[in-house]
Amino acid sequence: MIIPVKPIDSPCSKRLKLMNKVSQILVGGALGLSILTAASAADPKPQDTVDYRKSVYTIIGWNFAPIGAMMKGEVPFDAAAVVRHAQYVEMMSKAAPEGFTKGSGPDAVKDTEAKPEIWTNWDKFEAKMNDFQQEAAKLTEVAKGGNEGAIKAQFGKTAETCKACHKAFRKD
Image (tube, rainbow, N blue to C red):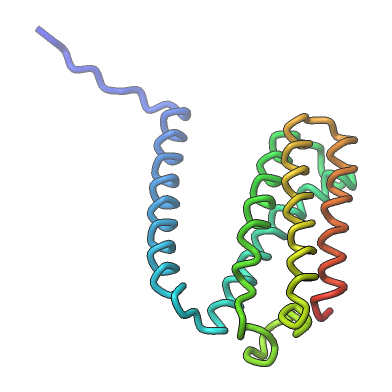
C-alpha cells in the first residue's frame, strides 16, 4: 500500500512558488507590452514617445540611485545588488535612444524636458548616448568584479556621461 505524502510547505518552497508566479506575471506583462509596442511602433504618437522615454529614464534612475547611495556610504555596499542595478542601467541605456523619435520634441509635446537641439544636432546627441551606453556597459563589467573602489570610479565615469548629455540636451 502506498501512502500519499503531503508536501512540506516550507518557507523556501513558498518563496519559490511566489517567485514563479512573479516571473510568470513579468513575462506575461513583457509579452503584452511588446505586442502593444509593436502595434504602435509603426506610427507612435509624440506623447507616447515621451511617455516611453520618461519610463526608460525612471528605470535608469531607479537603478542608478542605489548604486550612488552605496558609493557615497549612505547604505552598506552590496556587490550583488550593484551588479543587478548596473545591468538594468546598461539595458535601459540601449533602450533610451528609441524614445527620441522625430516629432517628439518640445515643439510637439509640452510635457518634456528634451531640448530641440536633440533633433537639430542629432549626431552630437547620438555620440553622447553612445558614451553613456559604453560607460554603462563598463559599469556592469566592473561591478561583476566586486571591487568597491573600481566600481566607485566607473560609477563616476558613467554619471559624468549622464551629466554631459543633460547639460547639452535637457532643460533643467
